[in-house]
Length: 178
Image: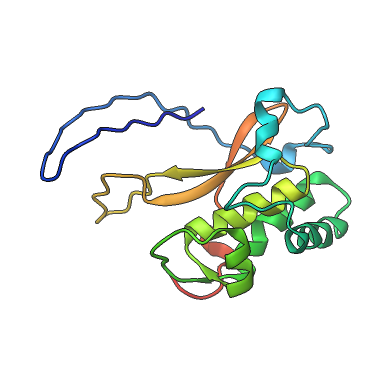
């Protein structure tokens, strides 16, 4: 689960907070997962991550058709999730957006930043029946001094492992941009 912290501030007011946290990092070798990875036995607390929402319209006919097309090419769940993962990077051109567009606008426009890559992946995954959620995180590089999350990625739920991080904006398959 995630925590959200808000500090209501008046104009020109500042606040300084120090937060400490413990982070668990694990490596998952997806090739070791045996089919079926995803089951119909989804915990109630996870079911909401199958539902469509504003930025992940997994009930939209175009998204459903795309998910079906990508899934029909597969004999197992790992192939389905790989196709959903690779689709945004292969079909979207990277361009920084000033506001989130969501999966459908990214699909129609063919452009987006990490937010749209993640949104499209989540919508396709949900349409395939795979619980997925979009995440915001810090993406640090040498010159980065981010004070708020500055990268969007996603997670899929695997019953035997829990939430698994996925970054559909990974560079190896990206089309155009940085």
